[in-house]
Image 1 (tube, helix red, strand yellow):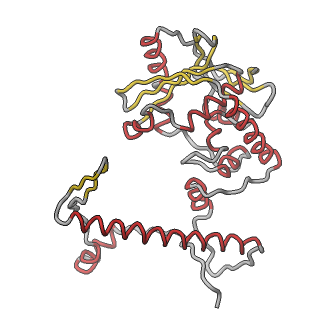
Image 2 (cartoon, helix red, strand yellow):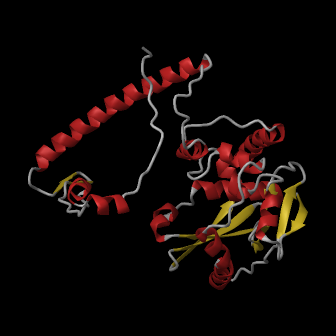
Image 3 (cartoon, one colour):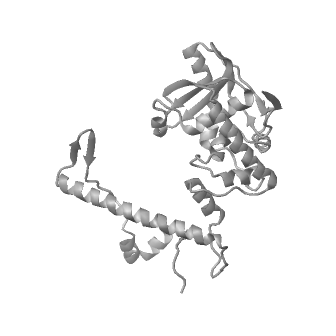
Length: 313
């Protein structure tokens, strides 16, 4: 069961963000589980421990909020199921670190009171909703059901502004048990002010690039002994990548040889294509040689940190 932690009606956005730092919300669940493509657990930990600067809501989040009423009304129009809008930040009685901010509540004919969740998605992500629901949203609504004790959730999505879909998700005790364990462990890191371990996700790599964008010239440190095992892991993975890359290139070369001048080849239910593609690109080398002043005016200097492992001399 849940208790009301705060009313979110007319609550300023920055105040709402402060309340969210008092626990783990539904949209945080996929980050804690390490499957979020855009945020790493360490980045979430920094947010919960007030180590990240304030950020305004992005365009996608803004329009998702603006379209929430439209999605809610369309769901009622199509199903006849009325949705009660909720403006409350809920907290689990049994697991106080688990918070929930529901888009609404409605009645299921079998399960009774349940959750309503409204989503919007770009047309580019339409494939993620084909006969399925993205994993991060599955975790989000299961998190909400853990907080509220409800048995189900209606989740709706407006895709590309012109495609509307909805599904009903039943409570899954196995997923909920996993969430309680992982979120509890994560919240222990927050309370102890100790960061969780980084993983191999793109979000973690992005976090490191943004956290440490520049190296101090000529600076040098002695790495701990645990670095030896990580170096071995890295080099073994590179060997595997090189092996599979060569196998991939060999298969590609042989298929191209089979195609010859043909653009398309078919076998069983597979379609192999080798198409001609024309692109216009700026010849920076020629521009620099013939118009150096113009080149310097419009050239952008970018920097990044190159990672490598070599044998010390």
